[in-house]
Image: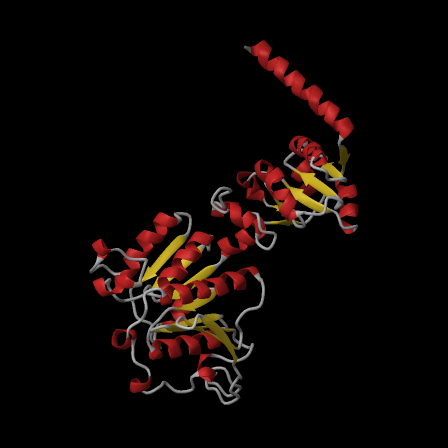
Length: 379
């Protein structure tokens, strides 16, 4: 048995020796120079090896996913590539593999990450501790706009969701599925059977339980790697600042004007982006309110409408799928905001009419006298 192991080791040594002749190997100094000239450094170590960080300019594509992901991450096969592993062996094997795929200039970094760090190369910390799973997020990794770096951004983000009902259900489900690292759910209500026509987070057997408890159970089953915090309270002026302060982004899934105004004022004061949504019957609205970047919720609705002009869902009803449509749009705005993608709905109100199947967008104008975002707001 020992002889067989020795033979196998010798064959591997000879194979790596032949690869050294066929694959270009460069040291850290040469890698620095090539990076200045437009080369791309790719760290091919597995997630569990990234505890000490990676090279600052490196893109993360694990060795097991390299051939699958390289085409979407680096579509131009003339782009110079430098592969880095822990010590240099896997990067040589991988360089040969990419050459067979048609990449014209692939070099292996001698000594790998350890040599990079020893030479004083810039290092950034990674999110390996967040357990970013290769299989769960494969469709994200395949998108150049997201990839592993974008997935790491999602894992670092804390989203606060006010309301675990109709709007909160699709928002929470899709943010958890997408791998947002920390979700805090705020809702003081219990599950009622009349909720189940639209509040898809909850199940019939949990009627009577707190919505936050029901939601946390469902979300943990969907993605156990996401941290779920729950607060069984109602937002008010006394607690709102303490509740919002730890979050990066706030999502309004509430169903009443006092909560919306309270959230808006606090988000403006604490400089927290607020993703707003509302539904009634066959219609819904979505907006993104960015502090310091245009209008806020109170600019849109300076005063609460009269009760007869704005009946609640309990009074007027709502088509069951409407919160799903609007909540998915809210979740989309959150993910775009985290990833820095596309154009957000800052100072815009997106309106959806299900009966005509039409969307329209209204430009919102900041109110210079707005008590929440204007120059004369309370300090």
